[in-house]
Image (cartoon, rainbow, N blue to C red; front, side):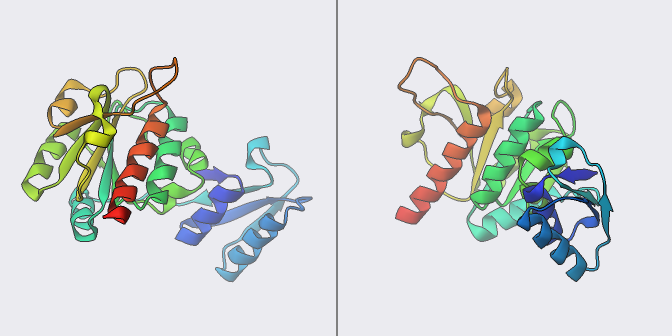
Length: 232
């Protein structure tokens, strides 16, 4: 897999997943020079090239495949840290997946769980849009999202789904350990997944548009989780 752009390449480098760096010969951006210096320090080959794809913006990395975690590892981490797990149900747009994974890492998510089918997988677009956050996240792929959510109840993990027909977010319990479930762009939460949610939360709007992009909605719930923890 290849990662393009300064932020994504830098985060991939920090995570230790880079095999080789490609740098545009006439690149002058000081941050690219930082990347080259770090790569050399880590003894990672740097190849200077006269041409790179436009979206690379002067630097590209060849990385090892994403190493998916066991879902039980993420559950244990969530309980131990008093944190939250992000579940993505049928998210098909890599831009949205990358954006919400960036937010998940920013807010200290214990891990992200995605289904093996009917959901975009972690690819080059997801990695780029996430600004390299995917390289710092524990990510698990599972056969059946609803079955995993059902399992969480045995561990005392509250499951909160995001959907338009829910209760206002301010009224929903977000006590840790928590699972936040966000549905796909068109259909939202699937019925089997929705059935396993302890609460359904909605973010109230005050304009004429009745909903938010899934990555924005997810980020608001994650922020609210951290805000309440901070305020006690």
